[in-house]
Length: 575
Ligand code: Q9C
Ligand code: ZN
Image (tube, rainbow, N blue to C red):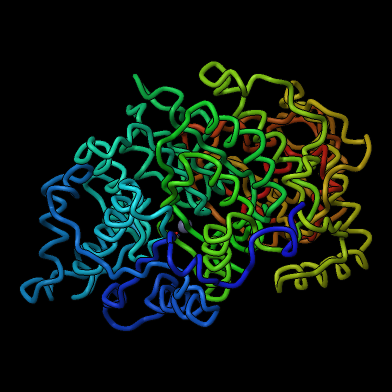
C-alpha cells in the first residue's frame, strides 16, 4: 500500500514544472450551449465551470499543460457521422433556424438546441481530437478534456441523450483512420458513464481495432437509453465479435466495490490481452455518489483507483473526455481525483466499502460467460467472494457498511421508511410472504449458483421496493384483483387462494408497456393461488413489450441482503 510518505511528493516541484505531462483542455465557449429559454436542465454550463473552478482552486491546473478548445473539422466528424446529420448540426444554431430549432430538438430523444449549440459541439469534438493527437504523438503523457455537450449517446445520424457529436468516437476514428503515422492501431474505449454508450457501441460494433467497454445501469433494459443495446449479449459482430463488452448493472447503488470487482475480473484481464496502444475514457461522472440521475455511488477515490489501474496499459496514454455527471460537487471532486491520479501515478487517499452486491457477481459471471471464447483469461473460475484481497488494489482502509449507515438523502429517507415499515409488522409479513412465494417459483434455478444462507458476504443496502401485481389483457378487473388480495377463488383456479392479508385497494394502478416477456406463476404461489397470475420475466428481456395493467400493492423499504435469494424480485419491482 502506498502512502504519501513513501513515494512521489504531492506538491509540484521543479522537476514536475519542467516536464508537465498531463494536458487539460477547457474552453468557456462550450458554455454557450444551454437551454433556449433558460429552463433548468441537468446538462448545463455550470458543469464544466464547476470542474474547472475546482481544478484551479486545488492548484491542479498549474501542474498541467492547459490548452484551449479547438473546433473539429467536418471531415473528421464525418468519420462517424453522416454528412446529412453534420449539415443539420452545423446550421441549426444559425439565425435562419431560430424558429425551427425547437422542433428539430424535439424530434430527437432528450435534446435541446440553442444558438450556441453548434459551436459547442464542434469544440467538444475538436478538443477531444486535439487531446488525443497530442497524447498519441507523445507530446503529452495523458490528457483530460472537460467538454460539453457530451457525446456517447450520439449515433451516426442522430442526436440523443444530451449528446450532439460523439466526441470520443470521432477522436478514436481520427487516430485510426487519419493518423496511421502515429502508430495507434488498437484503442480501448472505457465508458464509465452510468448510461450505456449506445452511440459509440454502434460506431465500432464490427471494428476489432476498437475495444468498446461500457459499464452502466441497465435494470433489465429499463434504464436510459433502454432496450437491449446495453445487454451483455451485445459482444460485437463480424470481425468485431468479442470487441464489445457491456457490463449491465441490475440496479442502482453500485459503488466502488462493484466497479473494482468488474475491473479486476473483466476489464483489466481483457486489457492485458488486448494490449491497447491508447485508452480513451468516456468519463461520465453520473455514477458518482450524489448524482441525481445515476443513483450509483462511486467515490472520488473509486474513480482514482479505476484510472490508476488503466494507467498500467498503453504506456499510460490515456485521454479522458467528460460525458455525463450532474451533481456539480460530485463531478468536480471526481474529475479532480482522476487528474490527480494521472499526475501522481497513484490513487488519491481514500476508502471504500468492502463488498460488491450479489448481483455484481451474477453480472460478472454472465459477462465472462459471454466473452470467454474470445478472451480465454475470462474462463477461469471466479473466486468465491469478490472482495479485493490483492494488496496493490486494496483501499487504504476498508470500512464495512451496515444497514444503519446513511450517507445520502436517499438513504436517510429510506431509513425512516424502514422504521415506519417495521412498525407495521403486518405489512412486512405480507411482503415477506410474497417474496417467499416468489422465490419458490424456481424460474431460473440453474443460475442460482450459490447458497444465500451461507456466510454473509453481501453488503446490505436499503432500497425502496414497490410490489406490483401485473395482469394483461382485459381479464383483470378490480373484483378479481381484490380476490387475489383477500383470497378466494375465481375462474380458472382449482382451489381458493389464501390471499395476502392486505385488504386495501391497490396503491396505484397503471397501464404501461413493459419490455419483458411474460410467464405465469401457477401452483407454486400459495399467496396468489393457482391460476393466471402474471409475472414479468427478468432475464428474458428481449425486444418484446407487453401492455400490462399493474397494481401497486405496497411500497416497502428493504435490504438487499434480505433478498439474496430474491433476485426474482425484479419480477415485480418496477421503479
Ligand atoms: N425519461 C448523459 O449522461 N434521460 N446523458 C431522459 C427520459 C436522459 C444522459 C429520461 C439521460 C441522458 C450523457
Ligand atoms: Zn450518463
